[in-house]
Length: 106
View 1 (cartoon, rainbow, N blue to C red):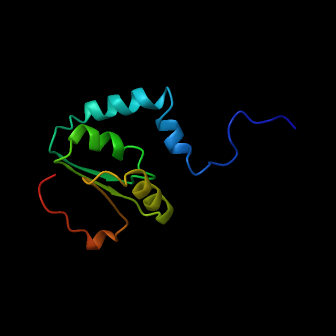
View 2 (cartoon, rainbow, N blue to C red):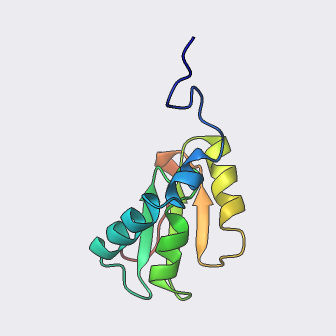
């Protein structure tokens, strides 16, 4: 049997490893730049997964901003909360869409 070039299963941290890779870093930087996130902006990341983008969004928006990550998978929400634990401007939620209350303009 010939070994596969690709991983058969995805380790829990594969998205974080991809984001930190030589391919992921420039892409994340480009995407954040194209979004034109300014200091103080509110950023909403629907389907945030393990929070790979939340860190760069928080950095771009600054300490006075609000960054909200939303995901439907409990494991992804837990991972995102762990990855952003020290960032006061980031919150990660797993609410039912009918219960969302977001104050302020987006």
